[in-house]
Amino acid sequence: MSQFNIGTKAFTAGEAMEAYRRVKLSTGSGTQVEYADAGDAFIGFTAAAVNLGEMVSVILKTTGMTFKVTASGVIAVGGNFYGALDGKVSATVNGPIQGRVLEAAAADGEIVEAILF
Image 1: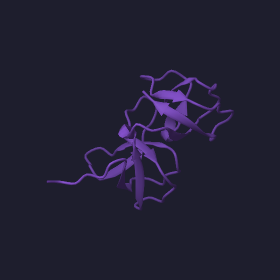
Image 2: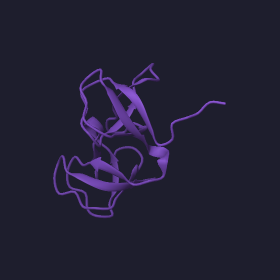
Image 3: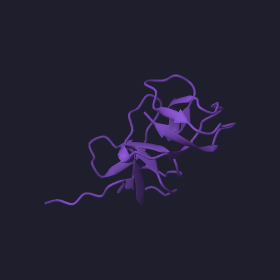
Image 4: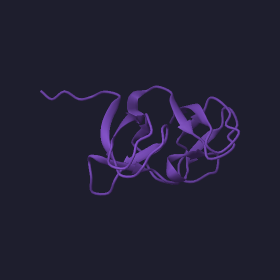
């Protein structure tokens, strides 16, 4: 019987990455990730900053917990968020709602707690 890692998984970074950003599997790969951009589906969030080619721990979105996310601008407390460029989240509608922030974000790059839908 196979044993699976529940909650986090290590992947190879397909680009330099910051912590708390949304990521997706790189095209044609099951072992490499890159930032999920606006409108992209994602698999989870980076746990730490890494350089290109390094291993990055991804907190999988299916863990049923709250997440730290990086805002691309202002998001009101309790506001819905959508995917934004470079793995960030935004109040600007772009694709499906991905979650709701539990804290207000006042500026680009601010890290806040959120839940996923």
